[in-house]
Image (tube, rainbow, N blue to C red):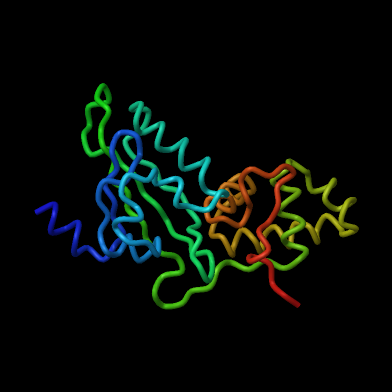
Length: 199
């Protein structure tokens, strides 16, 4: 039954050993990674994703291995020959016993979904504001740095809250990192250019 689900689900699935190396991957996962079975077998899964996603993924796998969590979900980028694809990755332990080095199951759902939804796009001003909000700037500091009124700053922040479907600034920053708008590993925070509208 598991084998049938693994092969026919339509979702990218991979079984990893206790060291996060790929033991088996279904056709959907191979298509998302743009690799063959021989190219992924015994490779650490984190080595197949974009460097921006790698450290968060390794931390999540470590938490699973040590029994600190039973599952985690993370937005990852996957480099391909012609472009970089993105998707929502969910990883979970196959066995519940935290004392064993349990194998892991990874599910990867491509983003944008097959209807062609585009990535969230921010204006240049929204990108500047988001970078500074992520660095901890207040409304007054933002207004002074960007030569806008406090109401103007709040207007742009409210627009971003609606775009990302979140209720407040901490959730805005968290969501921006989760879906790859803000790049991990950079300080001060930086918005990825593919998420900024071209004029």
